[in-house]
Image 1 (cartoon, rainbow, N blue to C red):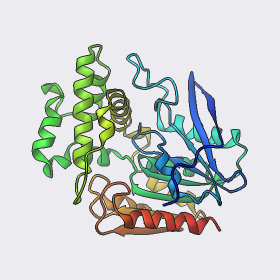
Image 2: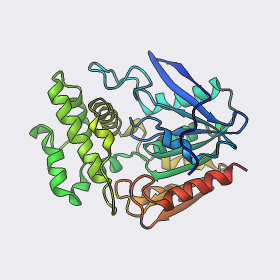
Image 3: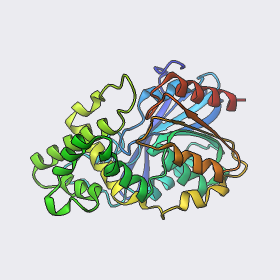
Length: 316
């Protein structure tokens, strides 16, 4: 990894409409190859570690917080937060508006987890704006994937899933669990909201814990981040990202001519490897790597090394 403490040389707030201001920053070489980072979650924010994937002498790296993610306002953790204008297609429009605002012709897109879904949605809408794509922990947020992660993973973690399910009122437990949580996370009672946020984040920590040495995410100890994250993830999952079922796979041919690298862990049962495999079959320029000992995220040196190698190669 390259130094992740490279400070931005430029930053700002972009008014994208709907009363939303998106925080952005640019790091590295002002004359370098442009790249944009699409963080996960939804709701995680563009943390500094993302900078470490790019050679600061060769890349001009744009990071931004997606709508509602703390530095972008209004914050999704505010008690009366309205998420009605926070959807995949709003985020896709924000990315393109940010590219135009910064005067960038094309950029490499790096994303992981939810950021991979967003990358596919963006690139299929705006293929002429994308030079290359590098993704790990690949998702497409289909209804089947949401059902897998919120319900079927209970077969692997039955006790933990029962605790997750039982926070939801009994008459809603057989339905859309993500939407049921979303309702609880917007309850007028702050105690109800916090209980739901804690339970959601405990389940998040559980379903990614499929490999040796996993450590719980300390960020979930922050009650504001916990609520922000749980609200945004349950909001997006509850609506299967507002993407027609199967559309991202169906339209992967639109990426023809864009070089891509997809990296996923064999032990990433939170984002099962078959998602990346199917997308690679439909995308003629995609290179697929399935890493045998890796779980979700950059959980092994092998995943990080492959991400770094791809980005270094695309630097030219």
